[in-house]
View 1: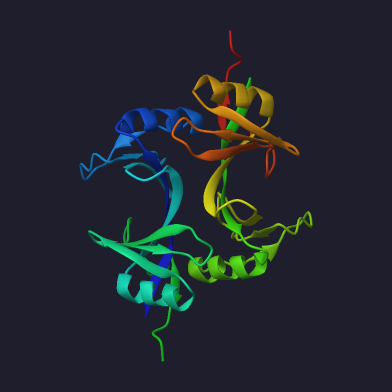
View 2: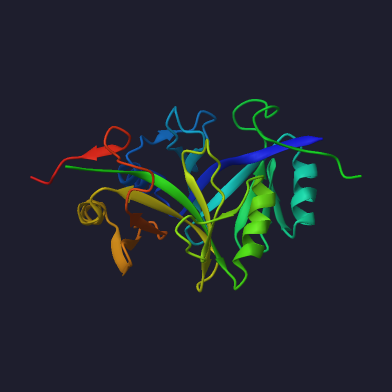
Length: 128
Length: 128
């Protein structure tokens, strides 16, 4: 048994200037952009305290887009569950997996971002 | 003076089968997909009652992606505000505007989706 839920909206920006990118989205959405607590300089965090979804601006080397992250307390089980629904594994990166949906969008399966998921996320039984 | 805020995450799917696309995302995210109250058959609504952001699957004729919508009680003023930040007008569609961010993503400025925005959204003064 494992848990997962939609956790994050990531605004991927093909830029060397992540602060400039975050500045646009910060002012567009009226949200303050701050550096990440973990010091990762490829991201800026636009999440407000009351936001249930995390909102990030990320510096990337592919064309700009928006992608979704699903957080899970068992990444391998979650990826297998999503594969059974038609998603494809694209690439393992650090602690997460990049998948591609049957509808074409890339998305990630990542570790729990804001504490344990039990009681706050979807609960998926082990395959029989 | 007008108001705006991030309102919606739209999963654009290049498909003739919007129910099949919504089925994947519904099961992936553990959210029920329902038809739109307004009868627009290009969309399925995955928003749960407690979700502050609306989550939609949309049938589109361009490559699949994810895009954001900003809701506003004065679309023209909001579009002008965003243009001043570097966004470009792409196309007016029905009641909304499609813009392109300086970081490359397309997004929309749409009418208020769930009631008046005053007191619940960013408040922007009129230009001097």
